[in-house]
Amino acid sequence: AQSVAQPEDQVNVAEGNPLTVKCTYSVSGNPYLFWYVQYPNRGLQFLLKYITGDNLVKGSYGFEAEFNKSQTSFHLKKPSALVSDSALYFCAVPTGGGNKLTFGTGTQLKVEL
Amino acid sequence: GAGVSQSPSNKVTEKGKDVELRCDPISGHTALYWYRQSLGQGLEFLIYFQGNSAPDKSGLPSDRFSAERTGGSVSTLTIQRTQQEDSAVYLCASSLDRELAGGQETQYFGPGTRLLVL
Image (tube, rainbow over the protein chains, first blue to last red):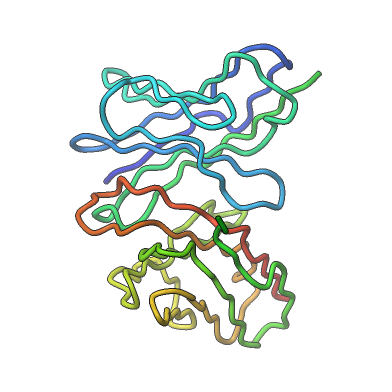
């Protein structure tokens, strides 16, 4: 079955430092992978997705993600974190023939001054 | 343009009552999805619509849950005889046509309806 895993429940980083939120996948064939962010009491906002092509995908709000086939990872990164980046981050993979998204358990990012 | 909208934003109900949750997808999006987000279960898929038909209802947790979509647009999720375990945030999403896309299309989410069953 297609799935993603987020090994860290929480990540803490100082403002201005680079941040990484980890995601690994278990997918047969060529994977499609997504990252979403959820701010408190809000819905999910799309950040970026990997379909094919360049392994480095650029998305909204300065975020990027690196697709690594050998390590089956799709880690979310940002060169310089902002306090306003503090939120809950989910990676996701289409399943059920592409009819739905299966999400990881989420990683709470906390950016401190 | 306008995003996905959901109403109500919050709903408090008593155990045993029926509730209806509404979703207005992005104009032109033929695919629509319902998900549930709860503390214990994370984000769970409930149902997928392609136009007015629902080819995948596999995530509906019981026969108390039903959903319909009319005119290829608005969708309503109905929970009958609500139970306390139904308390969760119900999220709706929409996307462009998913047929043959294999999951490439981006799903855009609404703000959710926070349901509390007392």
